[in-house]
Length: 175
Image 1 (tube, rainbow, N blue to C red):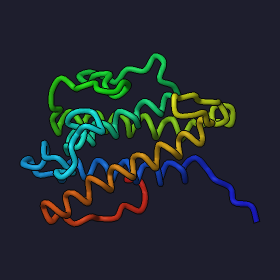
Image 2: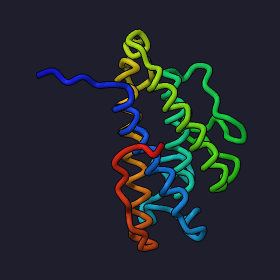
Image 3: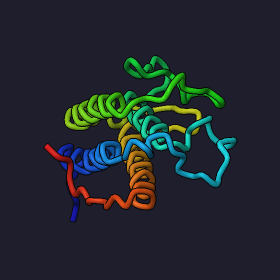
Image 4: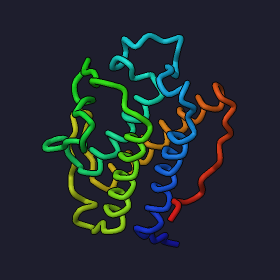
């Protein structure tokens, strides 16, 4: 029996991961916004500040946005965000606020939905090249979904441990 995947089905699951990220960004108490998630690990293995709650949220949105383009060349995040994440040792100029990240979240969510709902076979099969490998745009979307869900889960676990915030499972994207 063959299974037919439709763009709406893919969006509902990808959108659920993005909605989970948005929920965790909204749920973070202000006193945890700049707190490191891994207090026992030095930042030497990642960009300075990467382990803080807000920065991991930014990192997730940045790569969600970039991967929706399918290429690093020509990519630039929207203002007020900076093109930091591409080279080792880069540092963001300041801490981004919850409102700024939620605005970026809305932009990325809308863009992702539009991209998936309009996805045609030619675009899905387009080869995307990154320093870490080559894959089709369709596979890059799945890779992107996994990346968003991984970091949303890390942030949610941190909030559970630090603030006792329960996690609500999001079965499908909110319309």
